[in-house]
Picture (cartoon, rainbow, N blue to C red):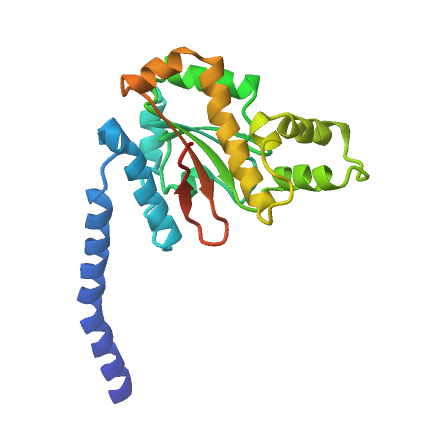
Length: 237
C-alpha cells in the first residue's frame, strides 16, 4: 500500500505539469496565423518555415479540422499553386506543413508542365488569384530516372503511356542543353525539368510576366530532398 501511495503521489505531481505542457503546446499552435493572413510578399518564407518544421520533425498540422473543412465549403482561397510529382512520398501539404484550403496542388508523374497543367495554373492565377506558384521537383524522381536510363540505353521498352512521359521530358530544351557526361546528370535533369516548367508557363501565358513585374505574382522552382525532408529553392539563370 505504501508503494502504491508513493506512485499515486508522483502521478498527482505530474498531472499539473502535463496540463501546463498541453496548454503551452496549444498556445503555440494558436500563434501560427492562417495563410490568408500572411502578406503575399512573405508567403514563400512562410511556406519554407512550414517545411523547416516538417524537416525537423515537429509539424503542427494547421487548419486540418472539421471546422476548417466546413468554412471552405463556402469557397477556396489558396495562397499558392504547386505543380508536384505524383510520387506518394511527395505530398505538398505535408512537406510545407499546411492545412485544408491552403494550397492548390497539381500532380503528375515527373511534375511535368504541359497544356493541362498550364490550364490548371491559369485557373489558379485568373480565378483564384494565387500570388505564388511553385514548380516542385524532387530527388530520386522515378520519371526523371526513366528519362535518364532511356537517354543512356534505348534498349529498354516502356509501355506506351510511360514512354510518352519520357518523350515529353526528352523534348524539353532545358534537358537537351545538359551535357550527358557530367557525373550528376540525374540531379541536373531534375532541376532542368523544373526550370522547363517555369519557362513553359511564362511562354504560354504572356501576361504572367507583367503580373510578376507588378509583384502580383511570384514563380519559383524548387527541389524537395526526400532524405532530409528539406525544400531548396532554385535560382533561375
